[in-house]
Length: 272
Image (cartoon, rainbow, N blue to C red; front, top):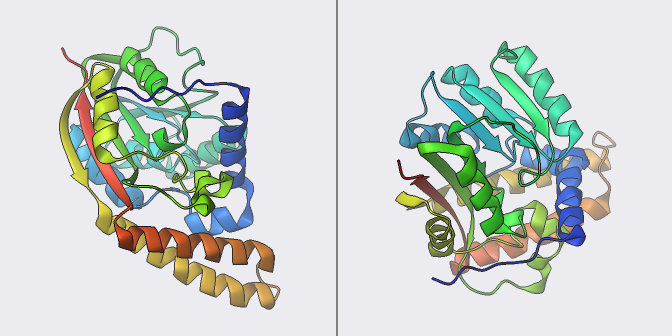
């Protein structure tokens, strides 16, 4: 398979940074998406970690750690040490507070910056998690190359992300769609091809379309509640934002029904 390479420039970084700011700071995005910010939530994270073989002695890199939910969850439930990389300082602040509340601040650390540019020193990791992140990166191959270099020989990478098989309508190609990990998503086969092209051996790939239906159902319910709460002045979200969210949701649901949009899981390993 020929690798899809996209030049990474200032505009791409600006779009990704804007995506993170909307996800962390926009009241509608935070309220609707929750803290895990991806379909399947922590239940899918737990399943992925089990398939990868993460254990208490593991050193894990959470690439694109968002608000810290995955890093803290794994540290608390498995006992492993996790380094979370986030593009926004607010993600670090929220993650630190969450780690403190859960009593795992000694096992979770945070680094702010672009995964392809930050200095992690000589550290090597047993496992890398990439949850609903690769789809919003412009240079996907470059990011996977960097993660390959951060893994120990024999180390594992777990990826979950939105999948696209077909052509999306224009409405699902803007910034709000990027926040939903839709705008730059690939097919499950293309994710596999990218991983293999950067030296990984794919051990497992799985269509997780069922989590999308549950995820969208939850969003629809929250939007309906939000519409009522906003009119009563109980939720600081304007009607315009709610209407835009509703339109995006309807577009996504249509594409899911058509089989164009889905969700996938891939477990891969760096050869020993």
